Amino acid sequence: MTRTGNSSSSAPKTAPYDRIAVIGSGAWGTALANVAAVAGRQVRIYGRNRETVDAINNVHQNTTYLPDVPLAPSLSATTQMSQALTGADAVIMVVPSGAVRKVAAEVNNFIPPGVPVAVCTKGIEPGSGLLMSQVAHEELGHVPVGTISGPTFARETALGHPTAATVAFEFSHQDRLDPYASPAARMALSMSTGSFKTYISDDLIGVEIGGAVKNVIAIGCGMMTGAGFAENTRAALITRGIYEMKVLAEALGGRRETVTGLAGAGDLTLTCSSQTSRNMSLGVQLGQGRRRADCFDGRAVVVEGEANARSIVDLARRVNVSMPICETVDAILHDGAELNEAFAALWTRPIEGEPRTLDISLRNPARPSLSNLNGE
Ligand SMILES: NC(=O)C1=CN([C@@H]2O[C@H](COP(=O)(O)OP(=O)(O)OC[C@H]3O[C@@H](n4cnc5c(N)ncnc54)[C@H](OP(=O)(O)O)[C@@H]3O)[C@@H](O)[C@H]2O)C=CC1
Ligand SMILES: O=C(CO)COP(=O)(O)O
Image (cartoon, rainbow, N blue to C red):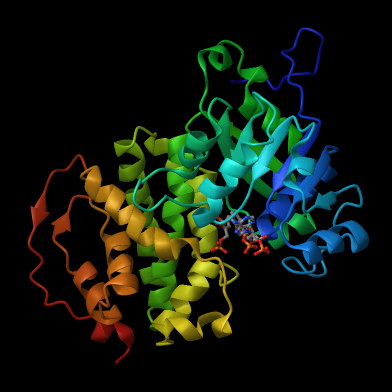
């Protein structure tokens, strides 16, 4: 697609969605709702927490998840899902991955036919190995399901810091004939503001794999940072993490190049660079030797990469793909592997070609030990 649409009478037309329902009143749901409201949409948030909903309506703030961030006064919220969905012409769903199936089934009771749903949760369902859009699709039937994903901390987005994200939906035959009228194009236009820059993708698998895998790699980066390793190590994990995203995306029918975009390399870079990320932060705390129960001072915090380390490793095995960083993080989180030993084993894996077209594998003669790298 090279033309941008709408600038002259002969240009292709893309109509934004006017009324958007946002399901989920957490940090990211509220930030996306605010973007849509700033873009001029009528937006209603559904949240199950009365206090949060009242604060959005009465003081234009989400005091629970985004304190001190002023929200668009036009934004309204309700504790009734049916109210949020009535009359909506697009839906944005943002709940943690463990709740997507249940919430999508509830949404299915009220959603008008054919209304597109962007599921902005990052993860893979345990057991089924399904992407979040696929889980939602199973519950919602024949509505277009996609996502909005990228390097997007909720607070920065809601404050209006320049942010970019990819809107991805699979393209139907009709969408290919007229991409300007596709749900991806309409959603991208609906969410565009002077500070929120959108891109359009038809590779939903590639985009969602980027978002899910980056959380696991970020936990790994955090672990190594917390354990005292330095910048070289982090850069290596980021780069090889992108490789792991690529092979999994491709094995599932996605495209390798999608992973080098905002929702893959972009989000991975953000998440592995800052302890604003809950995934990175969990890794740092564990790397410093904190017990899991004491992390985040014992508060329940959404850390998608934690459960997803296991579901991603399971999925990778099912499609015969090797993801050594994710496997290492999973072994530390869920199998009691000792952190330094597990990373030492990762670092002394066989020597391989970096372009994978160079089909070579040499036994690494080094003994697994990272103590000299750890300044000890
Ligand atoms: N925060 C961020 O910067 C970004 C987050 N994301 C993704 O968005 C998803 C949500 O994260 P985020 O918004 O940050 O999480 P938060 O912890 O901020 O909010 C989670 C929200 O989900 C609600 N919720 C949980 N379970 C249910 C349920 N069964 N029914 C209805 N609502 C439910 C919670 O309600 P309650 O308050 O009542 O518990 C809460 O409002 C994750 O997959 C995350 O990876 C993606 C990009 C950026
Ligand atoms: O996905 C995110 C930014 O794009 C948020 O990352 P965390 O869930 O690790 O906080």
